[in-house]
Length: 604
Image (cartoon, rainbow, N blue to C red; front, side, top):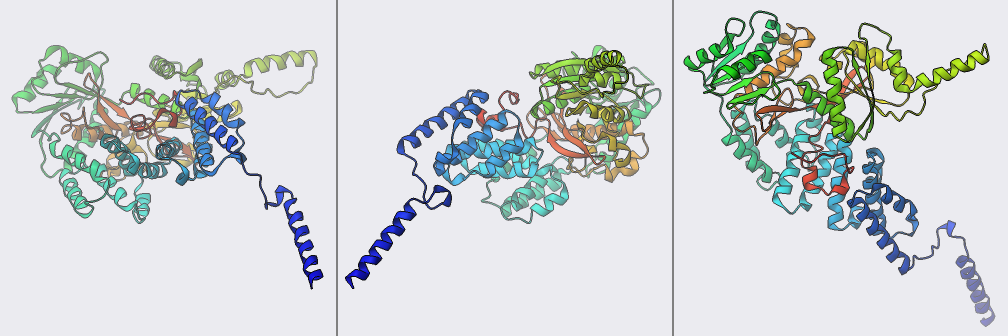
């Protein structure tokens, strides 16, 4: 029996010996990481975090590449994924950053790192235009914010993002636990200017049903804003051209204005004056004498300047254009300004990570000014304009400008030399490495289609165009050549971007009266009506209008923030914002290391 036990003992010893020497690849054994290596990696990770915090993204990336992920503990792996995502965001690579954040075990992160995680996730999704996932990340962030003002700002971005969701997606998300209440209050807040009475009732009902919900922190303030908001004047004078060269533009503005007025329960009295039949100052004084409490108009710059020069404005004027450098007591200027269009487009292109631009515009005085605006704004944002080119809109062949963008001119010259030396040689010019990564374009839709088609030969160059690229009405077959072009425009024109009752669809009969070039003026008329009751609060409470998110500058100019879209299958699809909500609140509630450093301007 003792011999039997001896054999068993030897067998077990051999088995254990064999197991002890199996290669690591079998997964049965892994050399434990030494305490020294753990401490060393902690120091390295802290150094990387400091580099990101001080805007040294390239150095941080080098340090990350030098780490061996297999030597990291679970907690270190979570921090490594977070820091890698932050570094990627520094270079504008949101897609890969999202992947690393998805692999991060947030349970292994300290509280401060959890805050950075959700901030980074929210920012990454906003860069890709995913409003829903960005809002979800901010909802995750909310309980970790200690300061009440930081929570309010974060909640404001959550609710603005959710409020911009298309109704179909909002209905779907409102069925999900944890999102239902957020989505419902977001949609209520999005409609606050359209029907104040209904808004107040819906807001009170939501608060009664959700007394413990986190959003009450923001909603309480929203309720106070609503209660104290300015009221629409009882009598409004509207100064518009009803004859002459601007008559059609005046009619489009008036159509939108009257559509908004028709939806009101307590309607102000309206009095219309034709600016072609009298001097602006005389019409203004006549309106005052007839009891007007607010004047809306005039529409053209000359009339606005004339009114400002000749009259003391005893009642407010909401002018429907913008005269640069003009500032006067009681004068507000609201315009579909190309300055706003340019500012929004360049900020979106910069936010998307582009740096080296070519500006391309038609050969005419108006577009020359736009090209100058594009150049100035791009340089103000830290971008480089490599070339500023023009094209002749009367020609269909834009190959000269396109070749210059693609760096083909030098290539063609080389080919000509080769063919002279070797007759019969057959070569195709190839784009050279010009460094261009974005084209800032001013073009009509027709010209844009030809330019975009010819730009395909220039390689992987993004195109960001001013709103003139889009006619305003979906036309998938005709606009298919515009696929891939990004642009920022009036929310009213883009499906799912405007939350008010007076959508384009609801006013189809109205807009069918006008050519597509006047559609944006209908939206302007809608906003002009609702702004009548917002002027006294606009400097603190932006208005989410048909033409954009409207806020008041220091010189009483009303500034527009737009929404951005990209042509996909011949139709514009929303891709996010030029600044808001991705910018609003982000710098104020997040650390600098969570955003691509140098890309986000200071919050206003």
